Length: 144
Ligand code: AMP
Image 1 (cartoon, rainbow, N blue to C red):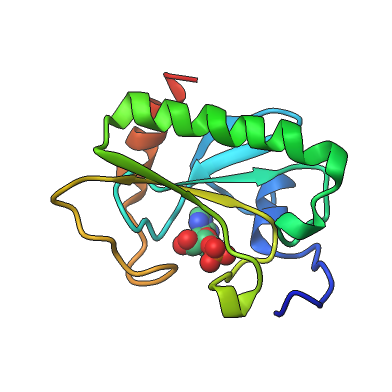
Image 2 (image 1 turned 90 degrees about the vertical axis):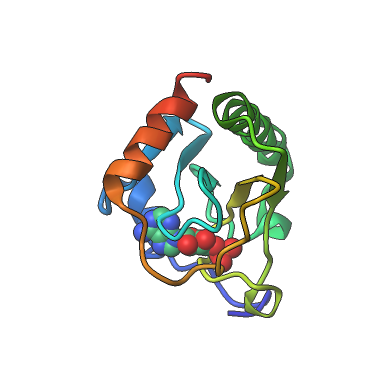
C-alpha cells in the first residue's frame, strides 16, 4: 500500500472502532480510540486511532479533524508517562508501506522507552499476553 491507494473500510483498526474485532482498550470518545499494541515494541506500547474518518495516514486527515485528534494523542501520551514513568517516550506515525506502515488507518504509536529495555521488532513476533496488556491498559486509563 503506497501513499496513492484507497482506504479499505475493512482494515483491522476500522473493525475495532466498529466493535467487530476486540482490542485492549485504554480510552475512547467520539474523536479517538486508544488501545494496547498486541505486538508491543516496548512495555506499554499504545496506539491512538481517529474515529469517524477514512484516513489511511496523516496526509489524508481532514484539516478540521486533525487538531482534536492530536489532542487525544497528547492526552494518551501524558497518561502513559504518568502511569509507567518511562525514561523517554517515542510518539510516531508511518505513512505508506515503504515508510514502515502495516495497517492503513491513521494511528500514532506511543512507545515508552527505558534505558535498559531494547526496542523489539515492529509489528511482529509473538503477541503479548492479554492479561499483561489489560493490566497496563487499566494503569494508563487511571491517569486519563
Ligand atoms: P504500523 O506498522 O505503523 O501500521 O503499525 C501497526 C501496528 O498495529 C503495529 O505496531 C502492530 O503491532 C499493531 N497491531 C496489528 N494488529 C493488531 C491488533 N489486532 N491489536 C493491536 N495492535 C495490532
